[in-house]
Length: 237
Image 1 (cartoon, rainbow, N blue to C red):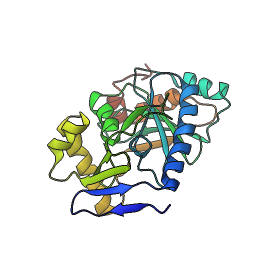
Image 2 (image 1 turned 90 degrees about the horizontal axis):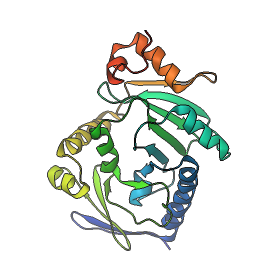
Image 3 (image 1 turned 90 degrees about the vertical axis):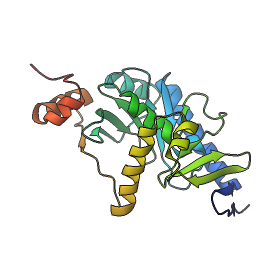
């Protein structure tokens, strides 16, 4: 059945067709399989949590419950027969925490903090929609904001979407996040719309024989911004 869009002035209602529902089920099934391999504390965020997936949607799993060493993440994936194509140390902005990214392929990425997430960064994931990875296949869809700054509110037939511009405080209340987080995402994603990208402060690929923590230490030695973001953790004496 072809997907139907019911146009309203603002908001608009979207009724899901069989193709989108099938894609959502496939993505959630794969994400739950990765989540089972990784254990407790892992979440999915974005369209896979909200339900408004489309062709090319990613599977993003993130660890939000404390610290976890990269060798433990890698060991869990390997024991489940899962392999990554590349590893990166990423610092989104000078004020954010350094993260490790394990890219399983072009569709799936596993993310975890290398120095602990700040509360505002955890709220960023809730802003986009967040669900535990384990038990995901049967979980309900949740509200969240898309990269087009549309609040996606699930309905039995699909979702209702509306702009959050001018409704930042209301959006924060619905999602249970600080309004500062909403304002920051409006600024960053609005910049992306204007110039075509958001930009990342640092993205460095990790060599095969090196760990993510070792790579972070090398970066800290040469870059005081990264050293401050990591709180000095891992810095060599």
